Length: 114
Image (spheres, rainbow, N blue to C red):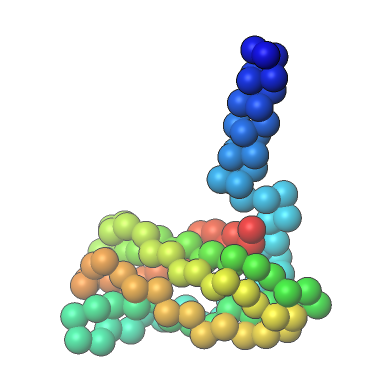
């Protein structure tokens, strides 16, 4: 009985680890980002631009990760934007909200497809 419990526990841990980490199909090469800009509306700043799926496949759970900087090039923090699904050769006009009002620049640091 203890062996069965241990096997079930091990299976659970393996499955949870697989679900929590990016898949081996990390496909940043399939996403092309154009014209990253900072826009401010009212008191909220946004990282805006276009992301294109350059592949012939539908991509699921796309994440764009940005580092945010002020006018002195001091890193302020990060912004992340998500898209549930991107069809083949489609373009997504993303808009990632920033938690800072003094954002001058954003650098794309990671694209993850799960």
